[in-house]
Amino acid sequence: MIFLVQIINIVAQLYVWIVIVSILLSFFIDPYHPVRQGVDNLVRPLLDPIRRVVPPVGMLDFSPLVLIVLIQVVSRLLTGFLLAIS
Image 1 (cartoon, rainbow, N blue to C red):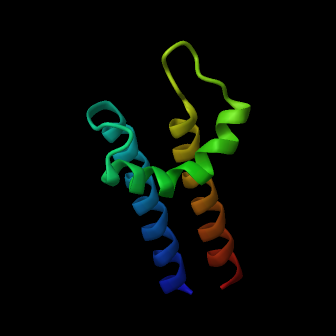
Image 2: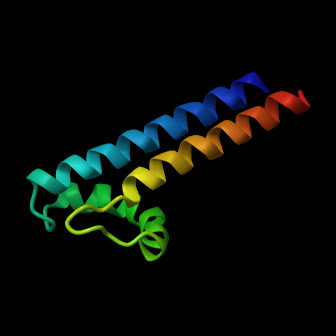
């Protein structure tokens, strides 16, 4: 069970880093660059529903921040549940 908890933590942290890379690439790389499109294709399916609920404030888009918080919350809930039942 500990192995599964570690995998969940690693996947959650990896996805958080992918979201951060997506944010950074949006500042420096053209939207049509293949690397940015690849990273955006990983992040966009989870960001689009959040963007429908949390609209941008001026030039700031808080949806990646909300996604990072949600990833952390879901990861902690899953690992807490798995540790509780073991």
